[in-house]
Image (cartoon, rainbow, N blue to C red; front, side):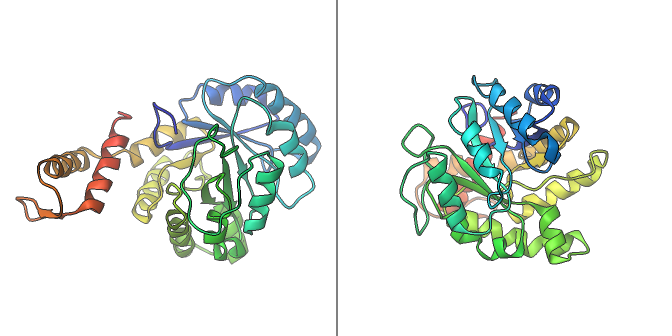
Amino acid sequence: MTATAPFPLTWLYAPGDRPHVVAKALGSGADVVVVDLEDAVAPERKEYARAATAELLAEPPPVPVHVRVNAVDGPLAGQDLDAVAPLPGLAGLRLPKVSSAGQVVRVAERAGSGGTPEGGAHPPPARGAGAGLPLYALLETALAVEHAYAIASAHPSLRGVSIGEADLRADLGVRNDAGLDWSRARVVVAARAAGLAPPTQSVHPDIRDLEGLAASCAHGRTLGFLGRAAIHPRQLPIIERAYLPTDRELEEAETIVKAATTQQGAQALPDGRFIDAAVVAAAQRTLTLARRR
């Protein structure tokens, strides 16, 4: 989170072995750029991608940059962590193929995150306040979804969980998009139960299907997601538009917050709607998101 983007909505992936693409991503308007060392990079290009990313992160870039390292249980993740974790330009690590809380703890310790592993919910402290490097776990298998809360509450440095839907779809043998909704809802609940921000949606793989992207974002919003990963800059305004409050939602939120400031406790609005502290909190988040306009 930053002063200009208190709720990041767009996370743009760029392959680590293509520095010119990463440079374009940094100027795309994305809230966060994710430099990918994993799926987007061919095996023979891994070493070059790691070196190019380390060069990029030697100084703080103009927007927050996260790095998706290679699979946490594979042989390359340790090399990735050692190369990029100490660098001043790194804002966070995205950990693919996470299936257990122990994997998160081991990465946090190797990345120098420090802290004591937690068994329950914890607030997401900021880097620089003794919390260490922010970590984000990608859940991509049925086992990972089953362990969602344990992963989400594994360590104070873990700031978010999300689903890698392509891998999960293959693991479950799901034939249509609706088949993932149960897993999506479970991860949303796990994140919130652990005190984390709502998860971001997985990428929409068809970069030309902007109507489908908009519809998918609208559906994700109803499930409790907040924002989305993208693989092309043209997807960014669609995602942002889908997750920003509508004019009607903004008007309703303003009405609720205004009513709450004039009268404490639960109350009924003139139009019959009942509001309490939870409703007011949701309205305040809507107003915070609206400031992005």
